[in-house]
Length: 235
Image (cartoon, rainbow, N blue to C red; front, side, top):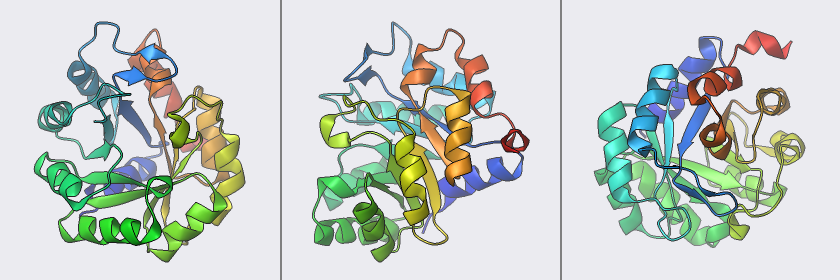
């Protein structure tokens, strides 16, 4: 299995930082247009230069304004390990993901029955993608463990509501203890401040994924650095 994505997170953590994965997302269903005239590929390059160990690219078009083309451009321009975020439901989706240059792919427990989830997980590994299995409940984390997930995400919001609910870091705090043993845990969504990043890390998250808050920051680079400041600040 390709572990380039998770290896980049571990390396960043070993360097003394909280690994923060910027989410390259054009539209927030709750907050609206995030680009505000900016080029998302240019932003990805800026955040790469600021120290991002890996990137996430939302390719879902209808609600989030993403595309496979955007994924390909970010992969080619940044050379970082990239996670494709979308509602993956078929092995053809996985093939397209791999051909686009992504290193990892999001598989959402809430979006498919267990047999399909297992099939997608196994096929992703076969073709060289690292699956990030996303959960929003204790039951889904147990499922992630059953299929052998080594990279697990806790979405602080309910993805079935397209991020329009009022999720918060408490989901990570309450669910982190149920993650599969030895799995790398990523706290996703609804993270707005450096203190929330540190709360997620204290709860057991190895990394965090932050999108909207970075896009809304007056100075994206400065805000990113504040989010990912040293692990020593947790003591």
